[in-house]
Image (cartoon, rainbow, N blue to C red; front, side, top):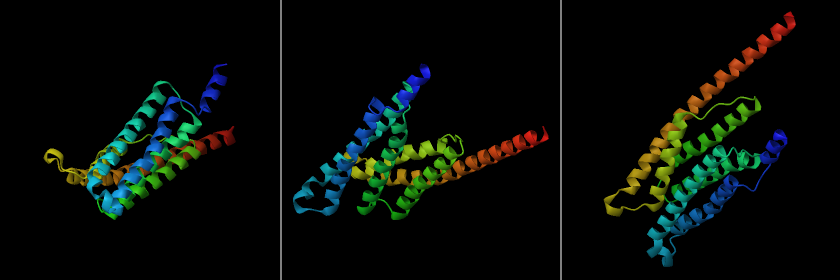
Length: 216
């Protein structure tokens, strides 16, 4: 009975964590549109450049908050679904990658940093698929969490691109992105080493098991 209930929960789509994830995806067009309008330099919109930047920044902050809460609620209520496991990382990638690309288009992030951050996301995703295929679980390292934190702080600063009360948002934003890039490289190497060790351990265990079976 308990197993049947677990199976039903696993295939649920309409629950609070998934709603938050879908809401986060719906916020992405607002961010892109606001920054694109700034990039297009329409004469009628020039007086609203700062407003559009803040709109994109605060929308990104709201999206980042939903990212935290959907994961927290899913863990707290033990709501782990196939749909959520697929959609949540996709929503995160869409949010961050689209933001980085359009900020680069605005000339606020060097193209090299965007390449590092985007390729790192693709690389880590591929490694996680490999680990899952082999039945291995490699936890997210602290370096990866720091990378995400720096990224989530730096991106909205670069979207707003203002200096309210003397706060140098452009300087702070690009500094956090540089830190995120550095931590992304270190975390990718760390994740790779941990996965290789686990693969080697799994291979050794399989060989020992086969030798024991042959001996018996």
